[in-house]
Amino acid sequence: MFRRAVPILKGISLIRITTRGFNETRAAYTATVKQPKQTKAMPELNFGKLFEKIDELRPQFIERLSKAVAIPAVSADESLRPMVVKKAHFIKGELEKLGFQDIQMKDLGVQPGPVEDPNLQLPPVVLARYGSDPSKKTVLLYAHYDVQPAAIEDGWESEPFKLVIDEDKQLMRARGVTDDTGPLNGWLNVLEAHRELGMDVPVNLVMCFEGMEESGSIGLDKLIADEAANYFKGVDAVCISDNYWLGTKKPVLTYGLRGCNYYQITVEGPGADLHSGIFGGVIAEPMIDLVKVFSSLVDSQGRILIDGIDEMVAPVTEKEMALYDKIDFTLEEMNAASGSETCIYDSKPDILMHRWRYPSLSIHGLEGAFSTQGAKTVIPSKVVGKFSIRTVPDMESAKLDKLVIDHCNKVFKSLGSPNKCKTELIHDGSYWISDPFNASFTAAAKATKAVYGVDPDFTREGGSIPITLTFETQLKTNVMLLPMGRGDDGAHSINEKLDLSNFFQGMKTMAAYLHYYAASDEK
Ligand SMILES: C[C@H](N)C(=O)N[C@@H](Cc1c[nH]cn1)C(=O)O
Ligand SMILES: [Zn+2]
Ligand SMILES: [Zn+2]
Image (cartoon, rainbow, N blue to C red; front, side, top):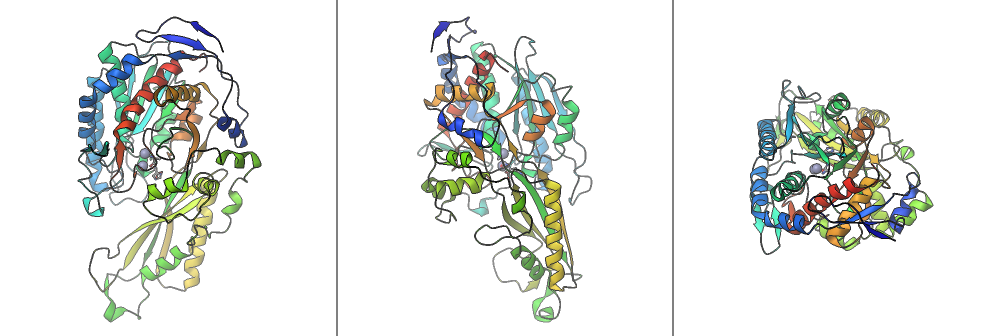
């Protein structure tokens, strides 16, 4: 290793250090992707002032987050679509205040697929730039401003759309704090800290914030394809902060995601909901048919029962197996995150493989059925069941759809029911797996070390960010996932939280990442 002083970025001192290669975890990654190529020199930077400023701006950052999470931008709820649009405008306002340029609200048109309102408009994609210096690299920062549904009756300790700071636990609670309003705000705050310090932002920024991620990123693929040679021209790297550490202690960088194909099964028969005392045992009940079809999809050990799916999954290699033991994660962390001891597997490799590299099928819910307290003796006339399959290499989406729909049709036919049954895809998003041996991952690893004092683990994510592969293929760039929150944050669940330390350390990591990436010899 050698050190030599190199020119100083405004406000940041810089010492160049050659890197010697890759740690074991990263070397083991070769199991599933290409061989690593050596990344050249990466400088050491001093972030003292920048990190102090991020801490100092705490009241402003909490206020911005509090305003953002107060807007119930639930993309899955058609009746809340105006709120999703309101949040887009809130973000636009913040971008304007922070001096972003070329801010555009991209209209994606009418929402396709099964919707109640055939004229339902998709929420806009918010685009903005900061800087256009041809001598700098350009980083595209993607995040989503929509959130999952949430209601206090689900068991929240406090109103889901009101930011609560729990001083005892040193955390913030509200829908979206970790997924993904907190990280989205993180990028705005990083920019604010630079401006407050009069510090040069070391890269050009292109922001891309969407409002349909939680509903399959409908409409965004086309926008990215259309803008690849326009708004997104010159993007060198894409950074997404929209997932979580695997556990609660060790920071991670993420190089893979599962995909998600989301389906609905509609079973209908009687002309109206009926009295079960009058019609029970006499007419064919849609709910009974639906439960039969549901039960044919998956067993209680999580095994998918649809023929042909297992055959599409890429085989496990020895090299890949060696990777799992090195990851910092325990069954106890898994249980703590689920709030139970209901895990199907007890070994770390089994848990990780079933979370990252095998498909899973989840049954999410029902429309049209009696669902409140009490004992209503009704036969629902039409029920719509929702389920999804998390997809992995090498599953093909269209082939999977055919297997799923043929399976449901076959099982329904075998029931001999006079009802009607239709299975359809609501949305899909591809899995993604990348080569983490590039300048963007190296910069993020350096940033993580600078903030947390440890090397990050390199992980895959069981969840999905549907647009990731599209960025990679359309912009022909690397994508790097830089999570802010922890594995026990309760994303999509009740009492979603973000630890204050993760918010502030996360913003410091984001800031440091931009500087390390700018200073890297490679793109
Ligand atoms: C990981 C990310 N924060 C997330 O929660 N993604 C959603 C996206 C989604 C919704 N429907 C299909 N994909 C998820 O993984 O559920
Ligand atoms: Zn998300
Ligand atoms: Zn989510």
